Length: 411
Image 1: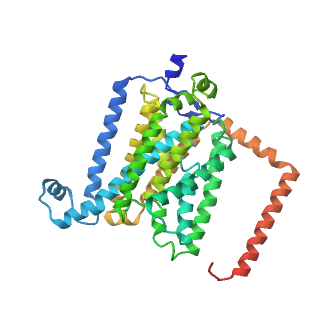
Image 2: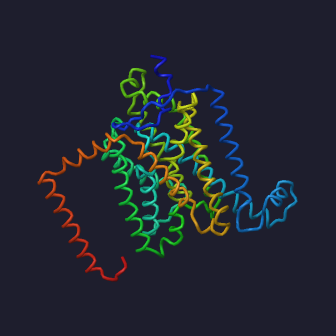
Image 3: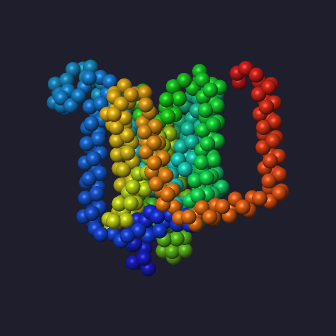
């Protein structure tokens, strides 16, 4: 039994028809491989961070940055670095780590490689409640806004997991999870857009933030979330062994003395805390929680030990930081410093994430699509069809009446 538990169950990527992860080729390296990969990722992250500090609308390049480090810089140059560039870099690092670890935990908890804060509508739920609070005049400090975002993200995640059937035992199919998450996320995005339009004055400044922006107007609030994110990551690492056992199945987890439901619940709650913190800091930055852990799992299929969650979770966080900071560096390098202010980082990560999601979808088993088709076929009963049709007609009629009564009136 010990040998079975020690196998890195998370070091697999190919989703099967049941939504589980199919075995990948065997690992070829040991701890040295994990150390090597970690070192490479850290070097890339440090390189991106240094480049990031030299980018901006102010004329402070590498030479002046060295002057800042040696104390030969003016007060204005120091103020630009401390008040603008360092907070933006710190935001990118924190958000990337939070989303990367959250995505890895959600994928393990649901045993679904397509699970992430985006596909479970966690980001959309957190985004919606923050905008709703601002729209109705509820002013909250940073940490309380994060708590409100946590409640919204948790409610959305519970709803998606319930609809997809992945909540109780993590056996919901990948197609069902994506469909349920997409439906809930679209609904929440529509409601959020409506609030931004109807309460444009009350929600001033939230539109750019809602696209995923690393710009920080109050760096002190950013520092308040640093211990929260670090504590949540540490708590997630403490769940590593239980998540390893969870990857072997609920029965194997129980035989090893672990409660699979408690492990799954703890992972989801910690993941929502991380996602809500990231959304509060920088808005909903898309697809980082999907891409970063998936890339790490690809590498883990070749590196022995990286598939275990004590290594997988921190590495996913580092990969998430590389993705976020790298995206911010790329948009400024390609489009210029001013475009880095105007084009949100979330736009770049979303484009990258969409391409990555398409690649994953292509590699999905055709049986998963067949199962989805069978599920749709069961909806063809006349009673269900008439019920849905009647509900849609009533909803449309209600919207038409409401529109006629309200006219140009502002709520």
